[in-house]
Image (cartoon, rainbow, N blue to C red; front, side, top):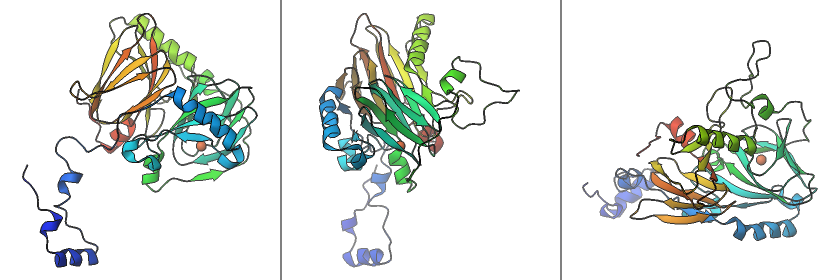
Length: 349
Ligand SMILES: [Fe+2]
């Protein structure tokens, strides 16, 4: 590829004339915005130890009361994007959120799509669109764009969850805002009961649900049981993986980010292909060695329970279950639905 002209090759008076008319020559920047074959990625392989961050999160509980925080969160920021930009990847925001016994995080709704993956604690609820969802370790609870949600905690120990939002994307689109609201009235019905069995959906007098988000809570007990059943049924299967979907449409559970659970058999090493989206890994059970990149330049992290890591797009990843006799379970979030909407999704093998 031939060298293109540089900005400093142009006479200063010509550059000044361009600037005065809000004009910019493309050629000095062409290779930067359209690099050869592989995009420029600011996302760095990054690891967040839960054991290391937990004391700082608990300290936030002492330092900042709920009315001064509204949402008491430590953001898992990728240094490649600049910590102050609060991004794990171009489209993903991650935050560890703490709710103490007796606290209430007031009702609001916002344009970014959020999910929470429950990390520890018992006795907290999140009410989403009038559905009261218990929060237990490993549960995935959706708070999609525009739906009211609030959190309350009736237990006696701290509750922590991992928030995953498409906030950087919605903020980039200049479409990010929130609305405060009143406490919600709890309505009857639980999506995880209505859609508890694959292949059948509620059909009241031949009518299917018209809700955009018919299922809001995906209990870990059910996802785990699905993975174990799949592993037992298909001893030949390398990747024992499930996707969190909208049970009415079979499509991704949310608009822009994809959510998955993966089981590694005892001692198993699984290589995931280089795909265009960035991805996030959160250890639900067991321990996993995560290698991001190929053998020539891999970054390796050891994920213990509740640890989180992120990997840039166009990068192969391999996961090794550190236990020889127990399965390991990993929650994955990625930007695949967004890439598919843009028409840029690739799997490079
Ligand atoms: Fe929220």
